[in-house]
Image 1 (tube, one colour):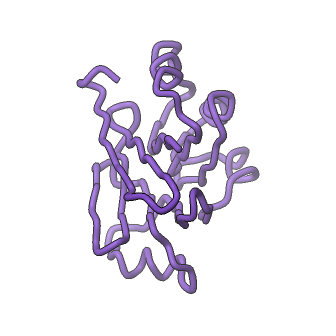
Image 2: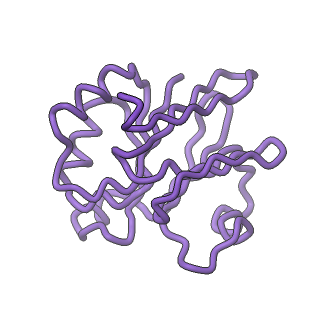
Amino acid sequence: MRIGVLSDTHASGLSPGVIEKLKGLNLNLIIHCGDYTHINVVHQLKALANFYGVAGNMDPPEIREILKEKEIIEVEGRKIGIFHRYGLFFTDRKLENIFKDEEIDIYLHGHTHRLRKERKGDVYYLNPGPFPKSMFIVSLEKDKEIEVDVLRKNQGY
């Protein structure tokens, strides 16, 4: 399964060129880690592929009404925890506590606008940075190694 992971779009909508590039990635699932800032972005992403997302601190009430602050999904036997904001003084332990009592394989978060691809043992901590500047393609297959590729706008995705 090919999963596109985005965050922090801060836009009223995605341009036709960006939508075409996303279509060309042949994604099975899109996950957004919050701060769309306009409901149009949510609708556009839902039209492209199966979609999961969380609300961010900059999102208006109409987004907060349809998206939670955190999500846990299971894909190909892996648990993915999705969250946006964690404040200035945040540690991985605080992120882990948000999903306490869950055995998360991949933590996805946004908010900092800093790309983060880190693996601690068998657990991944990922922040795709601000879209469309950067995003991840996470490839998951049951009982196979997780693959995480960074795509950057300047690389022509």
